[in-house]
Image 1 (cartoon, rainbow, N blue to C red):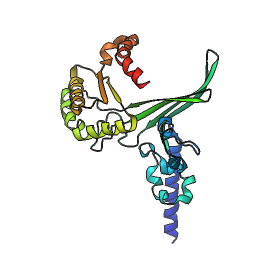
Image 2: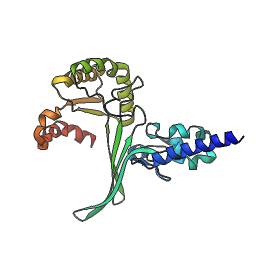
Image 3: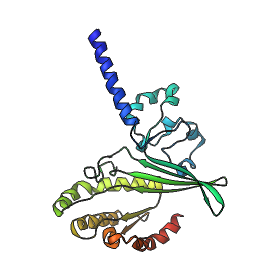
Image 4: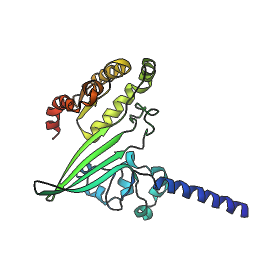
Length: 258
């Protein structure tokens, strides 16, 4: 009995150390009153029944980093108010003034817990359509009782250092089934898609850009637009002003998306 108790105490000490380590890291957020896992856009199009759900029940599982720990609690409604989804990403809030107009400016980046990892080891899209290191970033502006939300999504398909790596990765990364699932999901959640590919269009990354363009074309979906912009070539020597080339290319689409 004593040895068992001693083992339990050691386990408890280990688990507490793990929790303290995670809680001391930057980038983890939770709220007792606001649903951080959903954009303001999604929340404005929900039913009264959805609004009455607990934060645990209605959370977007893509962004719940403690989902595994909360799984057993989800079947116990009486403890839902203690079971808060934890978001990983970045949040900042500022009160601002432009020309005497005061408003609140909020930025929320939500990192998906699916297919997350170190950038050089976790890339591509899995068979379920989860893209590596997917991040949803939302800018919210509150002004004079009105709210505006602008949402962007980013992920890491691939970076490769040589033709050999490119050729090896193409088969693993550009799975048509996963590719289709990814964009089907994106369209359902976000609507029209504008894909901006910033990889090099020569050297080792050229086959990746070509394969990506081919696969987008093969989808034959009018809800998806594709733009390739060779960032390193166009903006080399810190010529950030040349980003205007890209901005001109997407200007019409930005107006469409408001």
